[in-house]
Structure formats: C-alpha cells, structure tokens
Length: 255
Ligand SMILES: [Zn+2]
Image 1 (cartoon, rainbow, N blue to C red):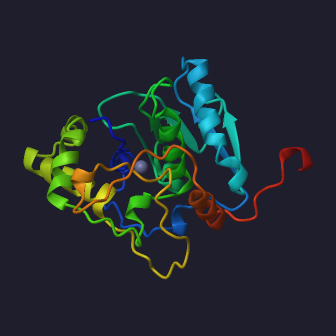
Image 2: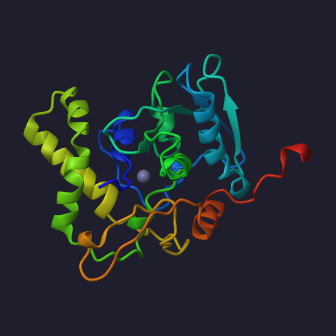
C-alpha cells in the first residue's frame, strides 16, 4: 500500500538528538526568528532543473502565510539554513528536521529530503508537508484534540515494514537487532500515535484537511474512521502557521 509517511525520526537522528526530546504541538524553541530570511539550498549539484523548480514551487506555497523571507541560495557558496536532497529510497516519502533543529545538522548534510519523484501524485504533498516540518509544524494527526480511535496493534503492524529500510541506517550505529526493533516501535509511536502535549497552548483547532496529516485507512482505526490524502495547504494550516509567524511580510517590491 502506497500511503504517505515521512520519516521524521530520520531527521531527528540526523540532527544528532539522542534524547529525541518530547515536543509540544508548538515548540517555540524550534521556530525560526520572526522576520528572518530563511535560506534554502539544494545539496545536489546535478539536480534536475524541473525537479528543483517543482520543489521551490511547493515551498513557496507557504510564503504568503509567514513572516519569514524564503530565499534560495547556491549551495556552492552558502550552505543556507535548510538543505534539500532528493534521495528516493525506502525510508518513506521524505523527512525533515523540525524547524531550527536543522541548525544542529552538519553543513555538508541535508536537513530535508524529498523522497518522491516529480511525477508522483504525492510530490507536492511531500514538499509542502516536509517544508511544514522545516517551519516547525508537527503532524496534525498528533494534535492533542485529534482523538483518532486507533487500533494500536494494527498501526504497529502497518508501519513496521515501512520502517524496514531504516534498519541499515541504525546498524551503522552498532545497535543490536533487539535495540533496532525497539527503536522502530518508538518511531512508530512518536510519528503516528503519540499526542503532542497541549502545554497551555490555546492555539488552533484540529484540522482533518491539514497537509501535515497522514492518510489512514479504516483498518487502522476502531469503528468507521479513515482519512484520505491531503495535498493542499489547508485553511487550518494557514491559521496555524500565521499564529507561529504572525505579521506576514510585505511583498519584496515594497521593502
Ligand atoms: Zn511528517
């Protein structure tokens, strides 16, 4: 089954964060500085220009709703804040460091990967979703008010094989097979089942239409609950990102 999952665990691993600290839905420590220029580089010199433009288009769909200025820089001269790779592997349809966690990643390494081809139906979804993480957004299905009626054993059975490709990554860290099993169970929990703590945040509503939401088949839930593919930046996403980065910048021609 070709559903969407993004390997945020890999972004966390790459950011060398051994504690994989618990995040709240909005963790202000992961947010970029209000009003700052956010520099985005493409790490692969030989990237197909159409693919590159497709990614830029998907990223820039966020621009009207934030007070950050998104700028593409040339990796040869400037590693930027966010570095994009386009490796298609068996580690999901993408991954990204969460917000400013990207700053903890070596300047020679990617902070965000788009793991689907330009022609894939999930391409724009993957770009918008992963860049949502890069702006500091967490998964919408983990919203404290989501209340999804999970059939938890089925969730683990469903996602375990999808994380299989991650085993080789973890073996490089000399973990035992048992430790790797445990790590994968934790990653499924952390990227699907765990609810973000509310921690006093009286922010936005849970939004089923969010691009930060995975699609889930009915089999993973108890009773009649499923959700399809969300490709667009939803009204809820716009509300949320405006809360995080208020006072949207004037257009560049006026500045
Ligand atoms: Zn994700």
